[in-house]
Length: 429
Ligand code: AFD
Ligand code: MN
Ligand code: MN
Image (cartoon, rainbow, N blue to C red; front, side, top):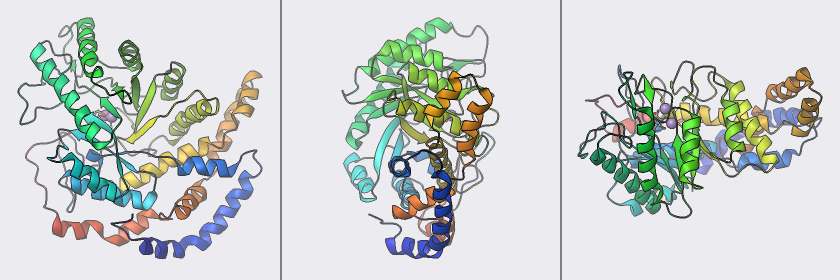
């Protein structure tokens, strides 16, 4: 399966580090043996974890001020899949790719599916772009897409989403995520209720085309590109829409799509309670939709989000959730950022599995606030690095993926075969 990195290379790398890792792992096991947990069950959970890579995430991102492409970065979806394959060969927890149409349009979807399968990867949720005017669009999305006041524009946006479903079916995807840019910059510009009505009407037409085993995820965002109002601005509007559409419609939480200091873990809990949580776009943020690397700003929040997920899973309240990283890498090599981010998400999940929810429940019943917090902090403060490294080692992945990647000189090699990028327009993700 390792077509880009051969197994021997990884084995040689791991040989250098395994002795020290064994010592660290023994220490970790001694430490957690005092907790009443089954480490083998936790290991299994962590080995089965998967987080999708977005096709647009392996390209250099940018801001509206500029973009600084790397030499050797991918130019098309096939090259992007090669980069995703490297990441998964090294860390083993990113087996799926999320495509974005029409950015990732190809002539032959069967060929793309085969190509991807050869790297041991598969396709995750598909995404639709109704936030910029691309060459072959008949209408402009300047004043909205699925909620536009003009029916012709809405119809084109509906068709674009239905086309995404059709492409996704060919690729083996099982869900469509809809994020729309629709909103306004001026008070009075839009009737808030009428635009929500138009959203529901458009989404009903897309929903009607979903295969029986598909889902549709609704992604909310409080602002940007509209800086005064957004049609699907928060989880309330998202929940109302998902509830109105039906069982196959669920809410998706992008961590960056909340105003600073929002209690996101509580939104996670509410959506689980309402049986409407469908998926996540992981990233981190300081001010807004910064799309910073997961875990780089607020790893405790990430842990608290996973605490809600693992608690619900233990109580059998949780169905399968779709995970993806939605980040923009402007000053780093996207492969390195995605490797570290996936590991940070894996780390938060691992720590959350060390929480004993029965003990927490006991402290909660007694209203012992200090012991409640302390119980969470004890799990958060355990260094799970040896556990994650051992899982990678035992799964045939790299103990130190970034060190391995640096030694590959991948970008330098790729810069000889991949065309250098020039940007005529700024594409902001
Ligand atoms: C933009 C949006 C949102 C969405 C992504 C891909 O803010 O996060 O998921 O585009 O459509 O970044
Ligand atoms: Mn997103
Ligand atoms: Mn975003």
